[in-house]
Amino acid sequence: MSNTNLQTPKGFRDFLPEKMAIRNEVIKRLRSVFEKYGFSELQTPSLEYQEVLLGKYGKEAEKLMYLFEDPGKRKVGLRYDLTVPMARVASAYQDLPKPFKRYQIQPAWRAENTQKGRYREFFQCDVDTVGSKSPIADAEILAVISDCLSALGFSAYEIKVNSRAILFSIMDKAGIAKGQQLSVIQSIDKLSKKSKEEVISELKNKDVGEKQIDLVFSEIAKAKPDEYLAKVISLAEEMGAKKIVFDPTISRGLDYYTGPIFESVVEEPKIGSITGGGRYDGLLKTLGGPDLPAVGTTIGLDRVCDVIEKLGLWKDSVNPFVKVLVTVFSPDLLPLSLSVAGKLRSFNINTELFVSDETPLDKQLKYADKKNVPFVIILGPDEAKENLITLKNLKTKSQEKITLDEVIAKLK
Image 1 (cartoon, rainbow, N blue to C red):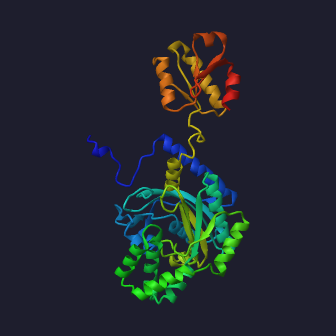
Image 2: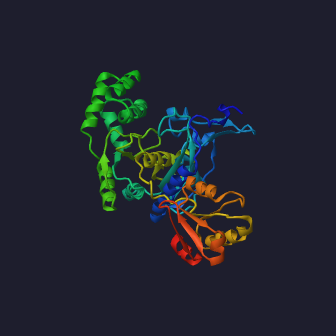
Image 3: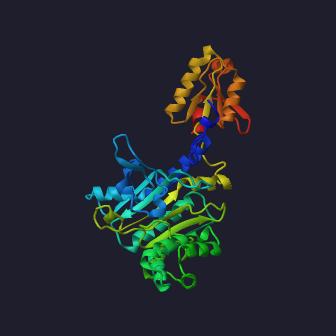
């Protein structure tokens, strides 16, 4: 087999154990915050019918969808995000308690131009509330975002907020035609990634006049939170949310947002937004469901993990999968190793048994060291005779002969 055949498709990745340890720890911490606020878990299929996916996100987004016919000639597609599938569920199961508060941690797919922090298969960690038009619901989402970022150990970040209502007001004041407003807003949203001159050039290519462009930027410069958004910010801060900043240039790229919108960014590395969301009150109705208000956010697992790795935030805090390796000294001492490994597992200590009774002890120790297993148990003839265990700490290179009960106490 050639090397090319061993590569993953562009934008898709393998996750080896070290990276999975970080990803699983992120999910564990996020799930804990979500459930602390009363959100329950939901999962939906990877495939949706195209009629569910199309017409919800905008033309630019639809260009990135993986759409195809299945073997039964049904028109389907891989989900683009978790919001539309959740809206489908809320529309299909109308007896769900309202407000319906759910979280969802699953992959989505987009045929992106790949770059750091932007992949074609990625995980989203979503939290949404359906059925409440109160600013309390919006504020709670901001509080969840703040709690999540704190739980992940982030400190140098901002939660940027704006409102589609403010943006549409700016468009009206600048004389932008209704049919062109979303396209102009999508260009404005790129100000965090492109220079003002590049955005102006893009707007001119969309046939927006110079006078209108000047008015757009003039209105942005003097924009302030409207009454609803001001209330949301105030309530969120009362709930303990930190580092909320009003930014009239953020808009989120998807068409379905109708009110407040949120993005979180870190100072370093320059990786784009790590959370994004807002209010989308009309989405359920477009799916043929009830006309219910909704608000939520996604936390991008992949970008969050990239930041943690880049900044080295969790070098010593992520517990390894295996706490201890039980070595096998010789074939005649295998029963003793089996017994000790079983006893440790009965106390919920993650224990690996070396799966050979012929490998020299020094190679078993090197194996444990390569896997970053912190402790090794050695059970040789002396240990068997004395009814003791040699516990070796691979980090400090120290070792001691102690009883099994003492080993259990130390490892727990």
